[in-house]
Length: 254
Image 1: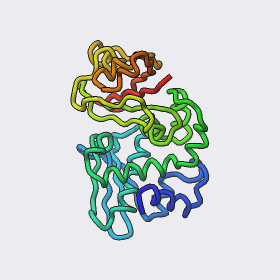
Image 2: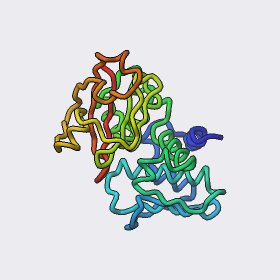
Image 3: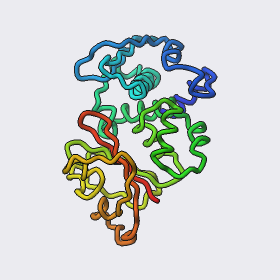
Image 4: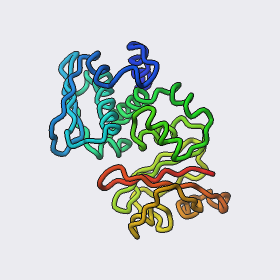
């Protein structure tokens, strides 16, 4: 059983139909998981598993409710999928934002959390062939009570139009994720953010636009072999700060 099926089985078992049906605390109680909040140095959340029960500890310094929801759902994923492998998981800001380099367990826990918080059928019914926009992402984020980053990444996975997320720290590209139909995909991980992008303007000049801005695709993808076919392609870009060091760019086609 994969991570998506684990989440779907849990939702079916409890009779979930909409986000207002159950809180994560109620789901945790159903699974015999206790949740507490205390200061945790160097961690956003952790789970200690003891057989068929567990304790999830959330860093009390994490005050953003929607981000906290993802951490809790992530830890529940560890409990259901990995309790026979490891008895304790500790997740830092890096683990949760840079999961693709942290091994399969973190990847699986994030996929589980996305399906638990934003089930496929419910998500698809809301976006319903709507072209991606930051306004749409904000509305969906509010409905599911999930962060902008988690919601946009979900759209990248199962949305109906081309989109990409780029995560950056200290003017360096850390990771990217794109939909299967995004026309340009090559970015050099670890390289400086291109100067004349919206993100580049933030890192080099401290400017951050509050609304999406149009940008020529070549500014982001000058080194992509396929740029010769998309010289006139215009993209939308919106930046969003997700942590003290982390910035994401949400990029989509017109």
